[in-house]
Length: 231
Image 1: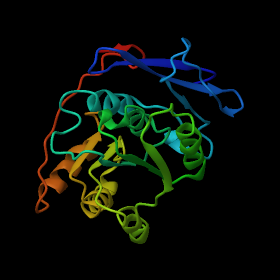
Image 2 (image 1 turned 30 degrees about the vertical axis):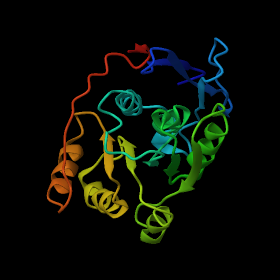
Image 3 (image 1 turned 180 degrees about the horizontal axis):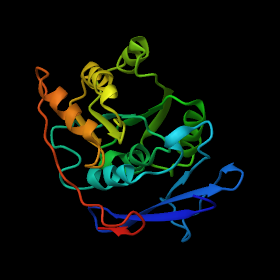
Image 4 (image 1 turned 120 degrees about the vertical axis):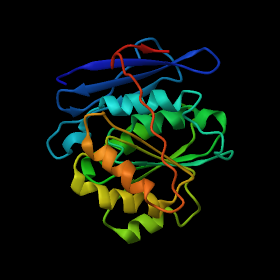
C-alpha cells in the first residue's frame, strides 16, 4: 500500500461489530484510526517491505484466519479456559491481536506473537501496545524456526493450547522444518491458513498426517472481499 487504509468489521457472537483498521504512513509504520471512535477498535500499523520482508502488510490469509477464529468452528471446544495462544510468523499481528482484543473469545488467556525479522518484531510490539483495555496479555518474541532452544523456551512455561499461522509455508523446502516446529510445540490445536494455490500447504498437511498423534482436518474458506464487512 501507499498511504492506504483498510477497515475490516467482524461481527461478534453477541451481534455487535468490532473493527480493525490498518494504516501505513509515508515514512514507515504509522497509526491508523478506526474512524468512528470505537474504544475497542483494533488499530494496526504497517511498515515498508524493505527490511521487514513479506510480513510488512496484512495478507488475505491473515484476514481469513481472523474471520475463521470468530466462527463457531474457529475456537475449538477442547480449548481450556484461559488458553495460551502462540502465533508463528505473525507479521503485523492481525489474527493474534484480534484474539487478544476479544480476550480469546472472552475466555481470557494470553497471546505470544513471534516473527524473525527485527522490524516486524518491533512492529508487533507497537501494535500490541495499542490494544484496548480488557484485552488478553500479549508478549512479543523473536523466533528463528531453526533454533530448537528458542522453540523450547516458548513452551517452557506451559503447554500451548492454540498455535496459529497465516500463509507461513510458501515452498516445499519449508515443509520439514515447519512440521518439526508444529510437532515440537505440541499445541492442542494448530490452525494454518493459506491460499489453495500454495502446493506446500497440501504437502504440510500430508507430513503432519503421517505424524503419530496428529489428526489433520482441512476446511475451505471463501474470502469474498478483503476490505468489507465480514459477517
